[in-house]
Length: 294
Image 1 (tube, one colour):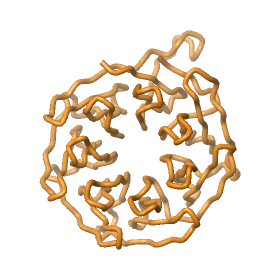
Image 2 (spheres, rainbow, N blue to C red):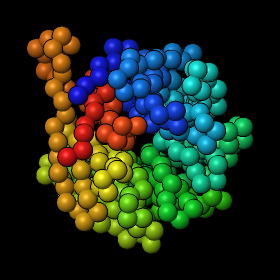
Image 3 (cartoon, one colour):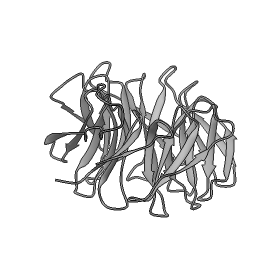
Image 4 (tube, helix red, strand yellow):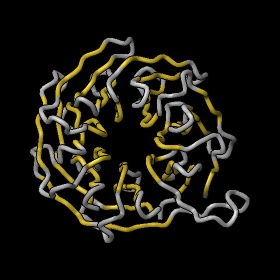
């Protein structure tokens, strides 16, 4: 099923504490929310030049998102009130186990921490040009992140100590990362067409996809004990179990009346488990896709 979003191009998506889907509209400088079965509500950002990307719930009941082009980490309430904080090219963001928000800064390469009250700290990543991307809490009271150009997985403690784990595959270019049901971190390698797994000791396993050019982008733990990921290069969604079994599923077709007979390039990016237990995917082509579990 597709929900067309005529107000822009969805990029990041998550489920908020209010039981609604929240998503970013990257090219229009907007943030939207959707209760399944209802019309979306769109909040226009001011200024609208930020390029909002990743969005996630905060410990304060609000939603937090990054604006990489505008150099801001921002907070939005259910009624659309926005508070912005300056940051250097932020991208990934997540709530940490310490009640603060943790985010990546791709250039010059730092991990940032900000409290709901706006207190900031930055921690250098010892990989010049490494471009930290997505970030997620681990099972060990630390945050784990991908180094897209540094070809590594990083770990930062709550006191700012950074450890890097190089990947076995050259040019893997990891992007999305999430905590799996097996207490390991699962990530995608957009450059190598693989799914990776790293346990808290640093042991890494890699699982090749059928199409090396499928360009996996984001990954999330599903309610079925597996990991779900988007395949930006093939307009598909994938599923991998903790034992490495991989399946792929096509995205829904564009409904009639939206784009006529023109080719459909969905461009799936973020995905999340929705309030209805389905997998929801942000399609930059202008829609949210809902995929029921097999």
